Image 1 (tube, rainbow, N blue to C red):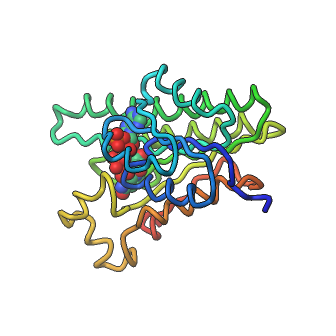
Image 2: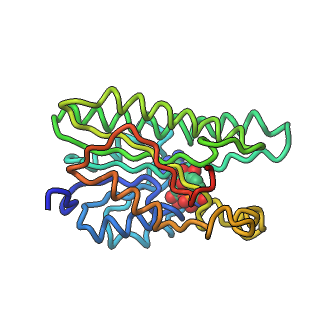
Length: 240
Ligand SMILES: NC(=O)c1ccc[n+]([C@@H]2O[C@H](COP(=O)([O-])OP(=O)(O)OC[C@H]3O[C@@H](n4cnc5c(N)ncnc54)[C@H](OP(=O)(O)O)[C@@H]3O)[C@@H](O)[C@H]2O)c1
Protein backbone atom coordinates (compact mmCIF):
# COMPACT_ATOMS: atom_id res chain seq x y z
CA UNK A 1 0.00 0.00 0.00
CA UNK A 2 1.49 3.39 -0.92
CA UNK A 3 0.07 4.95 2.23
CA UNK A 4 1.39 2.31 4.63
CA UNK A 5 3.01 3.47 7.84
CA UNK A 6 4.71 0.09 8.29
CA UNK A 7 8.25 0.64 9.55
CA UNK A 8 8.03 4.45 9.46
CA UNK A 9 9.64 6.28 12.37
CA UNK A 10 7.16 8.50 14.19
CA UNK A 11 7.75 10.60 17.33
CA UNK A 12 4.68 11.17 19.49
CA UNK A 13 5.37 13.93 22.02
CA UNK A 14 2.83 13.38 24.79
CA UNK A 15 1.90 10.06 23.23
CA UNK A 16 1.09 8.58 26.63
CA UNK A 17 -1.30 11.40 27.54
CA UNK A 18 -5.08 11.25 27.66
CA UNK A 19 -5.70 12.28 24.05
CA UNK A 20 -2.39 11.05 22.60
CA UNK A 21 -2.57 7.45 23.84
CA UNK A 22 -5.18 6.43 21.25
CA UNK A 23 -2.94 7.74 18.47
CA UNK A 24 -0.01 5.78 19.88
CA UNK A 25 -2.12 2.62 19.82
CA UNK A 26 -3.47 3.25 16.31
CA UNK A 27 -0.05 4.01 14.82
CA UNK A 28 1.51 1.01 16.56
CA UNK A 29 -1.23 -1.16 15.07
CA UNK A 30 -0.33 0.32 11.66
CA UNK A 31 3.23 -0.93 12.14
CA UNK A 32 4.94 2.44 12.70
CA UNK A 33 8.16 2.50 14.72
CA UNK A 34 7.28 4.76 17.61
CA UNK A 35 9.24 7.06 19.89
CA UNK A 36 6.94 8.14 22.71
CA UNK A 37 7.90 11.29 24.62
CA UNK A 38 6.62 12.28 28.04
CA UNK A 39 7.48 15.08 30.44
CA UNK A 40 6.83 13.88 34.00
CA UNK A 41 4.30 11.06 34.36
CA UNK A 42 6.71 8.15 34.10
CA UNK A 43 4.38 5.38 35.25
CA UNK A 44 1.77 6.36 32.66
CA UNK A 45 4.47 6.50 29.96
CA UNK A 46 6.02 3.12 30.88
CA UNK A 47 2.70 1.42 30.09
CA UNK A 48 3.43 2.18 26.42
CA UNK A 49 6.87 0.53 26.34
CA UNK A 50 5.50 -2.46 24.44
CA UNK A 51 4.48 -0.10 21.61
CA UNK A 52 7.75 1.81 21.16
CA UNK A 53 10.71 3.50 22.84
CA UNK A 54 9.69 5.71 25.73
CA UNK A 55 11.79 8.83 26.33
CA UNK A 56 11.54 11.49 29.02
CA UNK A 57 11.86 14.88 27.31
CA UNK A 58 10.47 18.32 28.06
CA UNK A 59 10.16 20.01 24.66
CA UNK A 60 10.48 23.48 26.14
CA UNK A 61 14.17 22.53 26.61
CA UNK A 62 16.39 22.57 23.49
CA UNK A 63 18.54 19.67 24.67
CA UNK A 64 15.44 17.51 25.25
CA UNK A 65 14.11 18.29 21.78
CA UNK A 66 17.46 17.16 20.36
CA UNK A 67 17.33 14.01 22.47
CA UNK A 68 13.99 13.05 20.91
CA UNK A 69 15.13 13.87 17.37
CA UNK A 70 18.42 11.99 17.83
CA UNK A 71 16.37 8.93 18.80
CA UNK A 72 14.73 8.95 15.37
CA UNK A 73 17.48 9.08 12.72
CA UNK A 74 14.99 8.12 9.97
CA UNK A 75 12.20 10.34 11.22
CA UNK A 76 9.12 10.40 9.00
CA UNK A 77 6.35 11.59 11.33
CA UNK A 78 6.09 13.94 14.29
CA UNK A 79 2.91 14.41 16.30
CA UNK A 80 2.96 16.86 19.20
CA UNK A 81 0.32 16.46 21.89
CA UNK A 82 2.26 18.37 24.56
CA UNK A 83 0.06 21.03 26.03
CA UNK A 84 -0.96 22.82 29.20
CA UNK A 85 -4.51 23.97 30.10
CA UNK A 86 -2.97 27.22 31.42
CA UNK A 87 -5.92 28.17 33.57
CA UNK A 88 -5.83 31.49 35.44
CA UNK A 89 -8.17 31.27 38.41
CA UNK A 90 -7.86 34.99 39.20
CA UNK A 91 -6.64 38.16 37.43
CA UNK A 92 -3.46 37.93 39.53
CA UNK A 93 -2.65 34.57 37.93
CA UNK A 94 -3.20 35.78 34.37
CA UNK A 95 0.35 36.84 33.54
CA UNK A 96 2.03 33.70 34.85
CA UNK A 97 -0.57 31.53 33.11
CA UNK A 98 0.08 33.35 29.83
CA UNK A 99 3.85 32.95 30.17
CA UNK A 100 3.53 29.25 31.01
CA UNK A 101 1.14 28.76 28.11
CA UNK A 102 3.45 30.45 25.60
CA UNK A 103 6.25 28.10 26.69
CA UNK A 104 4.35 24.82 26.59
CA UNK A 105 1.58 25.42 24.04
CA UNK A 106 3.54 27.49 21.53
CA UNK A 107 7.34 27.75 21.84
CA UNK A 108 8.08 24.10 22.66
CA UNK A 109 5.84 22.58 19.96
CA UNK A 110 6.66 25.03 17.17
CA UNK A 111 10.42 24.91 17.81
CA UNK A 112 10.29 21.12 17.88
CA UNK A 113 8.33 21.07 14.62
CA UNK A 114 10.75 23.45 12.95
CA UNK A 115 13.80 21.49 14.13
CA UNK A 116 12.25 18.23 12.89
CA UNK A 117 11.48 19.80 9.51
CA UNK A 118 15.07 21.10 9.36
CA UNK A 119 16.45 17.59 9.85
CA UNK A 120 14.05 16.12 7.26
CA UNK A 121 15.10 18.79 4.75
CA UNK A 122 18.78 18.17 5.45
CA UNK A 123 18.32 14.44 4.91
CA UNK A 124 16.18 15.03 1.83
CA UNK A 125 13.42 12.73 3.00
CA UNK A 126 9.70 13.53 3.05
CA UNK A 127 7.83 13.87 6.31
CA UNK A 128 4.57 14.69 8.02
CA UNK A 129 4.18 16.89 11.08
CA UNK A 130 0.93 17.15 13.04
CA UNK A 131 0.38 19.75 15.74
CA UNK A 132 -2.49 19.75 18.21
CA UNK A 133 -4.24 23.04 18.82
CA UNK A 134 -7.76 23.41 20.23
CA UNK A 135 -11.27 24.60 19.44
CA UNK A 136 -10.41 27.58 21.65
CA UNK A 137 -7.92 28.78 19.03
CA UNK A 138 -10.58 28.63 16.33
CA UNK A 139 -13.63 30.10 18.11
CA UNK A 140 -13.93 32.63 20.94
CA UNK A 141 -14.38 31.23 24.44
CA UNK A 142 -14.38 33.91 27.17
CA UNK A 143 -11.88 33.15 29.93
CA UNK A 144 -9.50 31.24 27.68
CA UNK A 145 -6.94 33.98 26.93
CA UNK A 146 -3.81 32.19 28.23
CA UNK A 147 -4.57 28.85 26.59
CA UNK A 148 -6.24 30.12 23.41
CA UNK A 149 -3.71 32.83 22.61
CA UNK A 150 -0.76 30.47 22.56
CA UNK A 151 -2.69 27.74 20.74
CA UNK A 152 -3.79 30.26 18.09
CA UNK A 153 -0.16 31.31 17.62
CA UNK A 154 0.74 27.64 17.22
CA UNK A 155 -1.91 27.18 14.57
CA UNK A 156 -0.82 30.23 12.60
CA UNK A 157 2.90 29.53 12.70
CA UNK A 158 2.36 25.86 11.85
CA UNK A 159 0.82 27.05 8.59
CA UNK A 160 3.82 29.31 7.96
CA UNK A 161 6.03 26.24 8.41
CA UNK A 162 3.81 24.32 5.99
CA UNK A 163 4.31 27.05 3.40
CA UNK A 164 8.07 27.08 3.98
CA UNK A 165 8.20 23.28 3.54
CA UNK A 166 5.98 22.85 0.50
CA UNK A 167 7.41 21.84 -2.86
CA UNK A 168 10.09 19.25 -3.58
CA UNK A 169 10.95 18.75 0.10
CA UNK A 170 7.46 17.25 0.53
CA UNK A 171 7.31 17.88 4.24
CA UNK A 172 3.68 18.40 5.21
CA UNK A 173 2.52 20.25 8.29
CA UNK A 174 -1.08 20.12 9.50
CA UNK A 175 -2.99 21.02 12.64
CA UNK A 176 -5.83 19.32 14.49
CA UNK A 177 -8.15 21.42 16.63
CA UNK A 178 -10.00 19.09 18.96
CA UNK A 179 -13.22 20.05 20.70
CA UNK A 180 -14.26 18.57 24.04
CA UNK A 181 -12.45 15.24 24.20
CA UNK A 182 -13.33 12.99 27.10
CA UNK A 183 -9.74 12.44 28.23
CA UNK A 184 -6.73 14.15 29.74
CA UNK A 185 -7.03 17.79 30.67
CA UNK A 186 -10.77 18.03 29.85
CA UNK A 187 -11.86 15.18 32.08
CA UNK A 188 -12.29 17.23 35.25
CA UNK A 189 -14.31 19.87 33.41
CA UNK A 190 -16.51 17.22 31.81
CA UNK A 191 -17.05 15.60 35.20
CA UNK A 192 -18.02 18.97 36.67
CA UNK A 193 -20.76 19.38 34.05
CA UNK A 194 -19.11 22.42 32.47
CA UNK A 195 -19.71 21.13 28.94
CA UNK A 196 -23.08 19.35 29.44
CA UNK A 197 -24.88 22.21 27.75
CA UNK A 198 -23.30 21.39 24.40
CA UNK A 199 -24.73 17.88 24.51
CA UNK A 200 -28.02 18.72 26.22
CA UNK A 201 -28.83 21.47 23.72
CA UNK A 202 -28.00 19.17 20.81
CA UNK A 203 -24.94 21.17 19.67
CA UNK A 204 -22.87 17.97 19.66
CA UNK A 205 -24.30 14.45 19.69
CA UNK A 206 -21.60 13.27 22.15
CA UNK A 207 -18.28 14.34 23.59
CA UNK A 208 -15.22 13.46 21.54
CA UNK A 209 -13.02 10.45 22.17
CA UNK A 210 -9.22 10.18 21.82
CA UNK A 211 -9.86 7.77 18.93
CA UNK A 212 -11.58 10.58 16.99
CA UNK A 213 -8.33 12.55 17.14
CA UNK A 214 -6.25 9.45 16.40
CA UNK A 215 -8.08 8.88 13.11
CA UNK A 216 -7.32 12.46 12.05
CA UNK A 217 -3.66 12.00 13.04
CA UNK A 218 -3.39 8.85 10.96
CA UNK A 219 -5.01 10.63 8.00
CA UNK A 220 -2.46 13.45 8.10
CA UNK A 221 0.41 10.95 8.38
CA UNK A 222 -0.54 8.95 5.27
CA UNK A 223 2.72 8.89 3.25
CA UNK A 224 1.11 9.57 -0.13
CA UNK A 225 -1.05 12.42 1.21
CA UNK A 226 -1.54 15.60 -0.83
CA UNK A 227 -2.70 17.66 2.17
CA UNK A 228 -0.65 20.34 3.90
CA UNK A 229 -1.17 23.60 5.78
CA UNK A 230 -4.64 22.60 6.92
CA UNK A 231 -6.46 22.94 10.21
CA UNK A 232 -8.93 20.17 10.89
CA UNK A 233 -11.50 20.69 13.64
CA UNK A 234 -12.40 17.44 15.34
CA UNK A 235 -15.17 18.83 17.50
CA UNK A 236 -18.46 17.28 16.40
CA UNK A 237 -19.52 20.66 15.02
CA UNK A 238 -19.16 22.53 18.29
CA UNK A 239 -17.40 25.57 16.82
CA UNK A 240 -19.70 25.93 13.82
N1 LIG B 1 -8.62 16.90 26.32
C1 LIG B 1 -9.23 17.73 25.49
O1 LIG B 1 -10.46 17.85 25.47
C2 LIG B 1 -8.45 18.59 24.54
C3 LIG B 1 -9.16 19.45 23.71
C4 LIG B 1 -8.47 20.25 22.81
C5 LIG B 1 -7.10 20.16 22.73
N2 LIG B 1 -6.42 19.33 23.56
C6 LIG B 1 -4.97 19.28 23.41
O2 LIG B 1 -4.59 17.94 23.28
C7 LIG B 1 -3.25 17.79 23.78
C8 LIG B 1 -3.21 16.62 24.76
O3 LIG B 1 -3.98 16.98 25.92
P1 LIG B 1 -4.57 15.89 26.94
O4 LIG B 1 -5.96 16.30 27.23
O5 LIG B 1 -4.28 14.52 26.47
O6 LIG B 1 -3.71 16.23 28.25
P2 LIG B 1 -2.68 15.33 29.04
O7 LIG B 1 -3.30 14.01 29.40
O8 LIG B 1 -2.19 16.21 30.14
O9 LIG B 1 -1.52 15.04 28.01
C9 LIG B 1 -0.51 15.95 27.73
C10 LIG B 1 0.70 15.15 27.32
O10 LIG B 1 1.73 16.03 26.92
C11 LIG B 1 2.89 15.79 27.70
N3 LIG B 1 3.56 17.06 27.93
C12 LIG B 1 3.07 18.15 28.56
N4 LIG B 1 3.98 19.15 28.54
C13 LIG B 1 5.07 18.67 27.90
C14 LIG B 1 6.34 19.20 27.58
N5 LIG B 1 6.69 20.45 27.92
N6 LIG B 1 7.21 18.42 26.92
C15 LIG B 1 6.88 17.16 26.56
N7 LIG B 1 5.69 16.60 26.83
C16 LIG B 1 4.80 17.35 27.49
C17 LIG B 1 2.41 15.15 28.98
O11 LIG B 1 3.44 14.41 29.60
P3 LIG B 1 3.20 13.70 31.03
O12 LIG B 1 2.34 12.49 30.74
O13 LIG B 1 4.53 13.31 31.51
O14 LIG B 1 2.52 14.70 31.89
C18 LIG B 1 1.25 14.31 28.44
O15 LIG B 1 1.74 13.09 27.93
C19 LIG B 1 -2.88 19.13 24.41
O16 LIG B 1 -2.09 19.85 23.50
C20 LIG B 1 -4.21 19.82 24.60
O17 LIG B 1 -4.09 21.21 24.57
C21 LIG B 1 -7.05 18.55 24.47
